[in-house]
Each structure stands twice: as structure tokens, then as C-alpha cells.
Length: 512
Ligand SMILES: [Zn+2]
Image 1 (cartoon, rainbow, N blue to C red):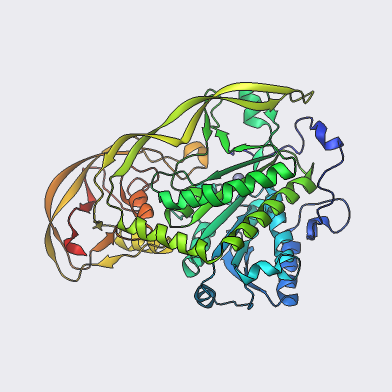
Image 2: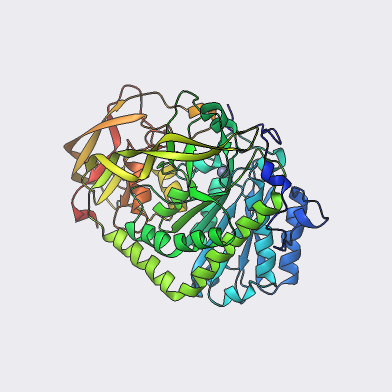
């Protein structure tokens, strides 16, 4: 079942749409706004537009992340003052590298359109001065197949925004391969949220908020990166929203299951882009406008909102300049040196929240009390001593390839060795499943017990050290009971009759 598709163009009264838009003054230079009445930008128009910017601007260089599953190009634009195209040369400029990503979900059009507006403003327009202090990468439409079909998911039916640890889809692999070439200091991920659907089904109201925002919340994300998100970007977002009279809240969502009335602050799965970007060592922020289910209603406002927020975030990044890059580097060094225990199971604190829903017919306010699971308030259920590294004795090639895309360094044992390690005894709790047909994170499909063991390790075995910036990715991928782990998803295969995982924790630093 697909969560948000097919989306009826207009399912609820949206009375405020009849009022003149306060955003009409924001000039939007993009294909969707060329002829008066706005429209969704076709794939060909998007490709032509970005190619035109790169031709006309000395700052913009056009490249491609690769092809989508149905063979559509996925453009990426690199913006530097010098107009560099080579990722290594851009990295050598030593300016903060900011990635902006949109339309992971194809039917969330406003973010993608705003990226085109932003690209035009950087190419030669009013935002070009930002390139004195920043290098900026824009992927306006990472899911072009979904956009063409006006659907949330990829052509395969999978949700791209759950696949940033497993990298089982062409689009996620292409993105992370490019990020490996030019690692982001900061990533802004632009989405739209559903106006009605589940909210209407469960609570009898539709969403009235204009914007929802959230930083990375997975417990493995460096605290220092999260602090940058909260200290530098949150006040900027809040001030910009207030200046433009937009209502906002931390990003909340609720499960597809109608009987489940819990509302969650984001989610903590490591395969969600917002979290995965944080785990690989970047500051990460999710920005959502109210849009899925609205068709082209309020499109000017929705696109302008993404654009104004992106502009404000980039300006704040430029003001911070070299200090931003230093702070991200310090966070990565601290992560690499961290010896604190790993949180392997946690519970989210629950608290009451009043959701500002509205009556779907009259548009009247209908504040609705709900219970919120707050992903920022974690109670640890189980923690585990942090290993110095992991030995992967089966599936090592696939594991090394995936982890390399996620900025993880791995090594091979030079010769055979007999080693004291910790072994996992695996009790499968449930069969591998794709939740609701679209998620790639089979939560808690595996449970384990840990015991000391001595094993013979062959030459060439894969060793993944934890003493590196992307150690959060390593633990999320390799602790078997982490949601979407490589053991749980079969990247590290196990036979039905086996109990001992072909995956071991190295607890001393002798391998370093
Ligand atoms: Zn989305």
C-alpha cells in the first residue's frame, strides 16, 4: 500500500487559498512560474532549465548523479565562485560545503521547484555573493520517476527516504556516491507533508501548519553536530517563519495504521535521510511545507517558503563561514574519539501535545490533543560497550561497498589471525519484511545475545574500525538489532540453521 498516493488533487477545503497570497511579491524564476498560472515542472523542462543556468553562469556547473530506475537523468548543480566542476577541487577550496536536496518523494513538488528558483538566484542573481564563502550543491529532483508519476515512492515502489543505510535503490546509491566525492558539511532536505489523509482518518481534522522542521534525531548522531543544527539553524528558521507569518512546528508524523493514534516527532530509523546524513558526519535539517494533497493550491506560497528558508539558511551559513567548517570538523574528530557506550535500544518519552488541526469543511480551528513520542527525549533501554571495530566474515564485499558510499573507511586483514572477540547469538524475532510494502527498514527483525569467543579469522577478512567520523553509520549498519541492519536485511547472509552471526565485535585496540 502506498501511503500518500494516489493523492486526490484537493480533498479538503483550504479557505485561506482564496485570500491573496502574502508571497506574491517573492519573484520566482523557474519553469513552474513562467506563464502566470503556476504549473508542475516536467522532467524535460527541469533538465533544460538547469542546463541553461550552467551555460549562462560562470558559477554553476551541471553534472549528473546518474539515471533513475526508469532511465531519467538526475541532475546535480555545483555552485562555486570559481565555477569548478571537479568535486576534489571544490573540496580543496575549504569553504563550507552545503548540499540541498529535494523531491525524494515525487509528489512533494514545491521543494523541487524552490531548488530551481534557488539555483537561478545563485547562478547569476541576487544570491551569487554567497559563493564568496560557501560551496553549494543542489539536487533539485532526486526521484524524477516519482515526480513524473506524481507519486511519493520510487518506480520500484520503495520509499527512497528509508533507504539511506541499505542503499538498495539506484537513486540512493547515486546520491551517496556523489556525497562521498564531495562530503557535505550541511544537508538541507526539502519535503512536503500531507494535509489530510491520515490526520483526517485518525483525528477528524486536517493540518493547518505551514511548515514543519526537524534536525537529525538518531542517538548515534554526534551531539556536536546536533548542537550546530540547533544553535545556528533553528533560530534562523524560526525568525524567517515568523517574519513571513508562517505557522510551524517540529516535524510530526503518524503511522499508516489507522488504529495507531500515536504521533511521533520524526523517527529515529537510521535509514531516514535526515538521520543518515547526520550519522555520516554532516549537520542535517529536514524542511517540510504543507502540500501533499493540495495540488497546485497555494503553490506560490509553498515554493516561496522553501526558497526563503533555504536562502536564510545559506546566509546564516555564509555568515558563519570558516567557523562552520571548523565546528563540523571538530564534531567529526570528537565522534571518531568517542568511547561512550552504544545505545542499541531506546524508548521515546511520551508527552501530551495539542495539534493545531482544522475542520476539513469549515476550516475552523480544531485543536486536537494527542500523545507525542518525542524522538529527542530518549530513554535508553539497552546499551552496549562500544567496540573498537567489527569483523565481517561473510558478505564482506557488499558491506565494504555500501559502507564506502557512506563515508566509512574499512580494511582487510593482512594475514590469518586467532582473535578474542565478542560473538552474537541471533534469535530472529520476525521474518524480514517490508513494512506496508514500502519501507526498507524492518524494525527490530533481529534480537541478539553477546558472548566472549575466540575465533580464527582468515586473511582478507573485512575489518571496520569504529575510530572514524562516520562511526554512527558503522554501528547502525553492523549492530544486528539496529533497525535495517545489514544482518537483519541479509546483506550479511545467515543460514536458517545458524545461530552465531558471521560478524564479530573487536573489543581491544590491537587491530588499529
Ligand atoms: Zn517527503
